[in-house]
Image 1 (cartoon, one colour):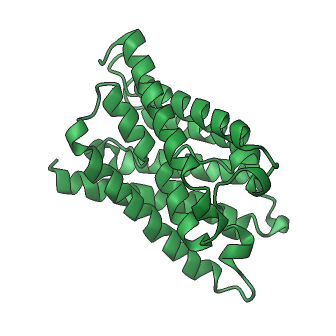
Image 2: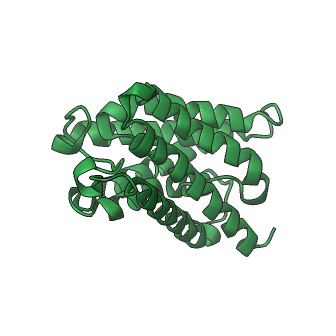
Length: 232
């Protein structure tokens, strides 16, 4: 596929990830009687990635995440020359999804993206569990590195064909189960950017963490896998 079609696939994949994952947190989790809680949000993120990996993964590779694109480039699976277009459309997809989610959420009287946090990522007072900056940075670094490591392994030619999407979706679910209380789980700078724009306050001030740390983690995960097992 040419770059334009691959970028379109990345746009829609990231759009679905943010709409499904953040939407579950903003809309469904706001109603305790639905009972989805952290587990439901974690499943929503995992299922959104799993479904789009199968839908458009064969077209673009199914990154939907700047940290994954950087990690796959470091791992020898993706061209550095295509990195900027991929990251650009991933961020645009996340912003578009956050915009749609904002339109839906504001249909409920009294809703405020600023007051609710709008599924944004944060540390300190804005961490769901009150975790400090250093705890959030360690968590995001390790989780992103391992996520890319799993993606590299699941999509290797040595892995059973056709099961990569399941492994990747379940890995993202597990990551959320561990790290939602810590940072509200980013491991994805695009996912962090879309909601932060509509939250408009503290989330934008803390956004640098959720770009810097996942990108470093993605680089580490890709480089470690390549160093141990080759670029495949």
